[in-house]
Length: 221
Ligand code: DC
Image (cartoon, rainbow, N blue to C red):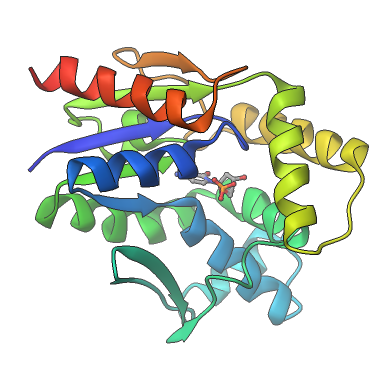
């Protein structure tokens, strides 16, 4: 099986680029952020404070997260319900970041991610795929872009979905989330030693995908 790990900060274009590259290669695209988002959403739905680790961890015995693939698209199920759309709000982003700093939450989601790569050729995106989840991945890419460019992309995405937000708000949220994701004790966001850095600042989606495919093909020979 072949695994391509794509890690990087929020809004670097990981999901869009990884989805397109997976289609091109005929691999399954696994978006691991969706798993942390599902856990975050559950806590919001049940009124559990995401700053209370004990309370969050207690819920892990009742909450169920799974993935389904339909027409090549990933759907994330929370206790059997498809929450793929509901997890894409700024509130859920912040809750996901908070719960993702908790080691028991990371352990809870580990096997699910690992098993996907055992039985499929995958492009998996996240924060710790090349460093923790799939350290044996044949290809590791650290995808990034400038803060402003990343915030601009997220901002336009939110507007397209009809959600209210200001650019400043999105930029501040993104910086806060990057800081938290990179400075936590459990599996912090950082490039794997053997990763290739791809900076998409100023690149079109098409060019970013081509750059990633180039790295994959080079690595796989
Ligand atoms: O990629 P995303 O924005 O959907 O991720 C949501 C949050 O989940 C993000 O703040 C960090 C966390 N995350 C993580 O810690 N490890 C991963 N492999 C993927 C996401």
